[in-house]
Image 1 (tube, helix red, strand yellow):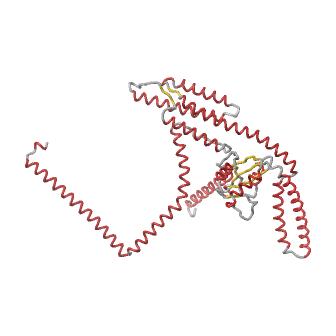
Image 2 (image 1 turned 45 degrees about the vertical axis):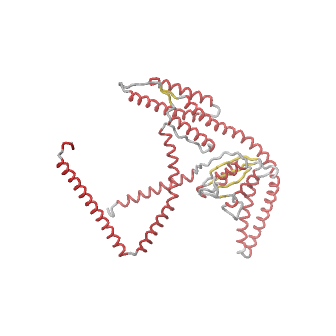
Image 3 (image 1 turned 135 degrees about the vertical axis):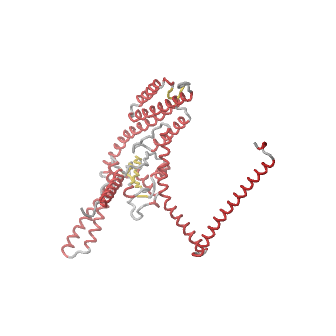
Length: 449
């Protein structure tokens, strides 16, 4: 088109374009000059009210305030980020048709780690498109792309159905019914293959093998729990024999002596403030209390000396986040036939909530192991004055590492139920919301009717 223009017309067009560019350039400069002029005016006005040093000081203070807010908000951010990571990890499994596993509170950390590894392998196979097989080139109304979409939909539905039914089979499985569970799994695969015959879609052998491995891990946990039941019977028989030799429960004797001494101290303080007959009566009571304490101490010494020959018992690590917060555990030992009796006893009326168990393991020399653990975490004691208070500012994971160093195999449970504590929080929150709702309604009522 430019070739059709005469030299005069071309020159005129170039002149117009140049003029337009010059006008636009001048306009841009004027706008920038206006903005700079306004900014200069604003800063001059600011300098009239404050000096440069004052402005710099204000900026530094503002910076420090922001830093403090960041530091104050970081724990909350971390607290929110951690569950977000967990939820995001579960979401990636859900998106590909994998159901997140549900664990019981008595499922070991070892099982959780194993299942996590299985899921990661399964996720990779699904993500790579190797979880299902499809041997067809379908066309839908002459369209290969629509046929491919239909086959993909078949694969997704088949995979979700398989995973959902696998979860049912896994939950119904018992320690003695592994063979039955395997047969159900293969029968399920056959049924789904029949349903997918139309599009020649089926579960791949690779994915089938991965799910079978996962099922074996769940079954191993069930077998372990059954073995623990049988082992516990052997341990109780040993402890029952020890109890006969001891002639008494050293823990109960020790607790009894401790509380009686506490009562004796209180009685002695009261006696110092009494006179006459009342003082004499109190002195008599104190004398009787001292004799009873001496009798119990003699019995305790005899039982303790005998206990040195029979050292088997349970090491327990328990926590109570409702009473002591997170990051505090009690490390102790017991020779009770039923060790949970000791844990339940510790969680009686003396504390607001029950204790949660992180581990409860039987060892041949419980006093020695307890002493080693107490010595290791001695600098983290909650009560530095009374060493009978066996509470330490450590996490269950740290105690687990210490037990591993000692070569002691334990079943660990890091997640705590804290049932009573969490239910109390829910009740308070519900009452708070109900109270807030009632106040909102009352504020809307007229002052007089």
